[in-house]
Length: 370
Image (cartoon, rainbow, N blue to C red; front, side, top):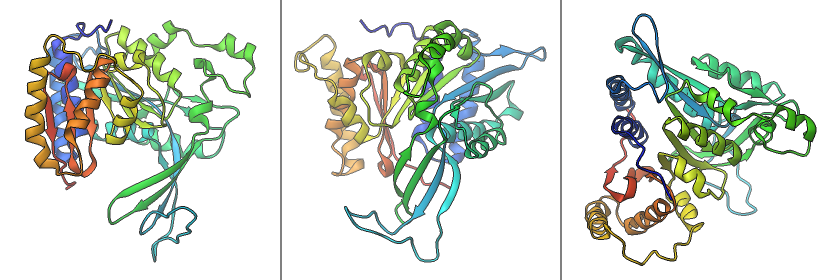
């Protein structure tokens, strides 16, 4: 059975505000929403989801981002090559090399930058911490500097003895903003032996002696108010973190971007918000077959009314390039298999939030950056 009744009202609104940050692309609106989140947390008065109070009555709240670190090389091109085709870079351009990146690193720095502008006016201190694995090469110094210079706490990070830093080779079409990349995961995949991830280079006995316990992981994340994950680190690490956060009543947001992988029900159930794009949504939903999908259940009439109203309202806004009924069908299938709120990012078409049990569906058009 899926336990969804434990979520508290204030936690629900806090998460909803956090998710709107993902939906709206304007930096000014980002800052406004961070102020709203901060106010909601403060008004809740509940310390069960992380945070501590200083003598000056300021509360420390912290976002923990666990994920990948890459040094990226960007290649500006006019279009993506077809199979077997060679392209040159755009005229008068050069590759950008050793740029700090990776979904985890990017999200941690973005959170730190956006939260820094709110701290002077709030009765709490907002902090960001990062959990990842640095490589054994000089690129790790670039990544450490990028995080610490943006006031991201890296005390929880490890350093791989045997594997280099992750690297990304990114082709970008400037006119359209389209990107396509090849990733060499390095320490992002192979540096987690203490978490139970087995690698050929690891000594089995040493790994068994150093393995983190579930209680140690809970202690690691208990000071934090929100856990954010992606799919560029091993699935086992995400599961252990999400499970610990779930037991501590700490909200979990999982960005599905990254490796193409199956996601089991245990992880789905632990995530308060699941964030795929339309391609990732289709792939995830395809991993589940619901034999009873066509059978009617209690409350189906209300759900069908909600879904049809959303289709009528949203389909004209996104045009014919996206099929809204299919998107909602995929989201509903994931929810039947454990997912809670599903936020579908649609690129230039905006975002679609399918709330828990399809209780309501919200659409947000994309906003141009200022």
